[in-house]
Structure formats: C-alpha cells, structure tokens
Image 1: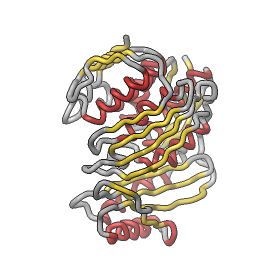
Image 2 (image 1 turned 30 degrees about the horizontal axis):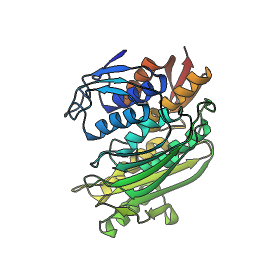
Image 3 (image 1 turned 30 degrees about the vertical axis):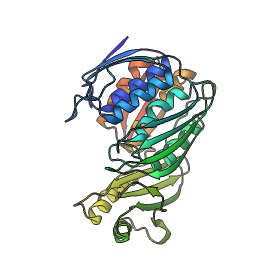
Length: 345
C-alpha cells in the first residue's frame, strides 16, 4: 500500500488524479490523506469525486472515503477493463480532468474503449478540449497510443453541460518513448474566440486586440464555430503549429474583465513561448510527463524533452509518478528553458 500525503508540493487535485491513474496502470493500491490540503476548500469536490468513481468503474476497484469533502481515500484497483463508459461531473467541473484520469489505464485494457464525458469542456485550471485535441492527442499517437476526441457541446462555468466523446485504443504492446527536443519548422498560427450566448462584439474586440499585439490578421483571427452549449462563456485561444508539435494557449473572459485584458494576457503567454526555442510550453510539459513515463517504464528506454518552464505543479507531478513507477526524472536548466530526462530505474 503506497501512502501519500496530499499536502505534498503543490497540494492540489493533480496528486489525486496521478495516483488514481498510475494505481490502475500498475495494480498498486494507495492511501491518500490530506486531500487538496493546499486549497481554500480542501477535500474532494464534485469533479474529484467523479474522477474517483470513474477510476473505480474502469478498474473494478475497492474504494473507501469516496464522498464529497472527504480528505482521505483508499483505492485498491483491479484490472482496467475496456468498454463503453459515461461519466458526468454534474456541475461545470472539468470533464477533461476526468478523461485524463482514466485515459492511461485504458491504454492497458484488452480492447478499445469509448467514453462520453459531461461537464465543463473549457475551464480555468484544467486542459481545455482544444488543447487535448490539438496538442495532446497527436503526441499520444506518436507514443503509440491511438486516440480520438470529438466535441459535442461546449461547457463553460457556471452552466457546464458540455459533452466530449473519446475513443481510446489499447496500447499495451505499442507504446514507445521518443525524444521531443525541438519544435521543428513553424507551420501555422491563429486565434479563435468562443463566446456562446454573448454579444458578437466581445469576440471581435478580443481578436482585434490580440491581433494588434501579435501582428496577426485576416484568417488568423477567427470567431469559433457555433456549437451547442448550455450557457454563456468566453474562451480566447491561440494555436501555434510546428513540425513536431502543436501548442494551444487559452485565456478566459469573465464578468468585469474587459476584452483587452483577456487578449493582453494571452498575448503575453504566446510571446513568452515564442521567446524560447524549447519544445513544450509549461502546461504541456506537465501533462506529457505521465504518458511518457509509462512508455519509458514499459520499454525500459530513456526519453527526454525540452520545455519553457517547470512549474510547481509539474514538479509535484514528477514526484507522484516516481512513487508508482520505477523511473527517475532529472531536469537541467538550458538557455531556452529546461531539459527533462526520464530514465528507467
């Protein structure tokens, strides 16, 4: 039984999600205490509880402490099972985080799986759908883990109601680690604004302000295609496509935050990434660590990547991964950011 203190490092929900994912992948049970101790509202909130219940259903786990606001949890997994699943957060909580909790385990199931996920699709502090579809999925395919995502409905806070369909193929025999050191040649750069149920002028102002700051114009500034949705929302996205990867950056509008501020914050994020030559932005550097570590473990072969920054969130994730997998992380500061190496123990 692996014993984990949820107040470690960054102290947020990533500790829970990484523990659930790798417990299912490796068959190792764990006990987690002081869950989300680093947050203003500690314990399991609705989206975290949905992650627990989804993991339990996928792996036939025995669980103790799976209740709202619970600050301790014991999870004893069974073998991950392929199938058709439906998971609903029931609020605007992020359904993409639920997806990322069960995604690694379903790679080791004995067949393909289809998931319908309901909740928030574009949330602050969570990977938006477009980030997963454009940045994460292509890298997973290169890793040997074929997956497909489709967006049925947009879901923003506070209404939620978004829907994502994910198809995940078994990759137990196909995972292979690879190095991701440089971006390759630039191929495309564009911005989109999704602003359902809001005046069209909001999207136009954000795009025009972003274009002025980044020097983008014309077809590079796009109003997001209308989709079904459950209420108002506002997400401004910038997509940078390169030969070896695609990065997606997102800022969210909210009441009292003007369009120029949203655009300015996104322009700063994009400019910071463009000022470096490292491959991954700080969020993708965090998200990429777990699937790459699984491939390193399975194939007993080292891999590395470069990134613009290493956040406290990423460093905590590295620590949690090493609790479950016999791999070690090392990081070295380089001129353009950081070089992260993963090696089998």
